[in-house]
Length: 273
Length: 172
Picture 1 (cartoon, one colour):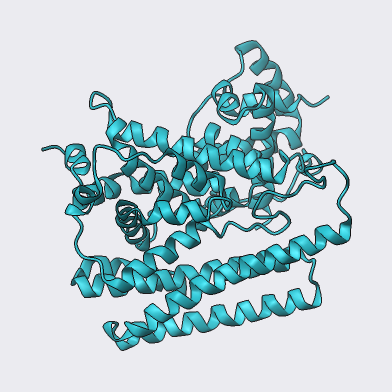
Picture 2 (cartoon, each protein chain N blue to C red):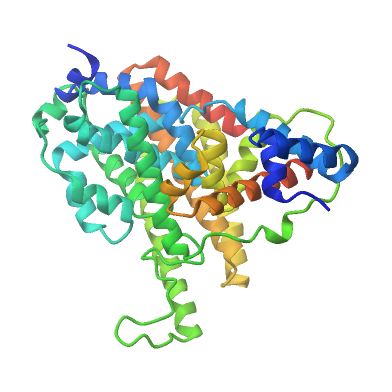
């Protein structure tokens, strides 16, 4: 009889008492499948111990800096108040915000500069952060529940499907708005980029647009398909991420921060490969 | 003036330095807990925004790195719990796939990127338990407390995660 999963796991990670370890070992020596399992578990444990840290994309700091600036202006709080239903974590963050010992003016003291279009980008970035955690198969408001608040009556399957479709449409509209805004910014400021980088960005955007079109076509033929919905949302996210990279890159070029710009371009190249 | 004091005084460049020193560690945790780089990036932004807001509550006698780690872990756990509540499930979908049968041998060591991608593919529930136990080094009692599950569930979720990873990595 094979040892149970606890024993094999414990044996693989070396956490068993000596007597139990010896008992498992006797079995493992004579049982090919258990020996192979233990070897595999040890491989996974070794590889897990060797996992590296991952660097965030270069745009991440730009997003954070803008969010902080907006926060200092009170803009994030106002925005979050309006979007409070969208995301529990964001809602908690908004609620927990108290004017601290660091006032708005002090917060902005160390900041570099903020062009008007950057403020717009910051709002868009916050919109993507706070409002767009749509997961196919569940509503943004967490409505997997099949009961109504008043009487606990079952909602019909047709109503639920309609609700999912409406929420998908809303999420799509949020994404499209964010994309439109970011595209306006990126297009207006594109002369800040060198032609080769601009061409690479355009090429990548065209690939993503194609993927979005394909996802839409899949949803049209199978409106209830969760993989198709998931794919559409992922493609929107990818496009927003690329546009955010573009805006971050333009910002670094304008600031004359060559190291920051190089970090972003390097990230773009890696994604393109 | 030290870095934290400069951050508290509103120096954004100091905050950027703080970010550069700690971002990779917190981003890695966030990505692994969330199961995607996109969500990990969003979480990282929320973590640093929260850190900026709460720096006033940081006690100077502790390490800023430890404080950020705790803030990040709590934020990731809030996210996981919130998502789990929405999904209304703690995955148990792996039972059918937990096989002791011999599978094709793998002759090469597991590549880090393969494992990283495989971790992202783990289902919710076992992924968080795996990340907290096998990657972050919490014991099962601590994982159980952090995730609000029984200790036995933590053990079984970690085992399921390892089995699932075995399947992903063999299937390559």
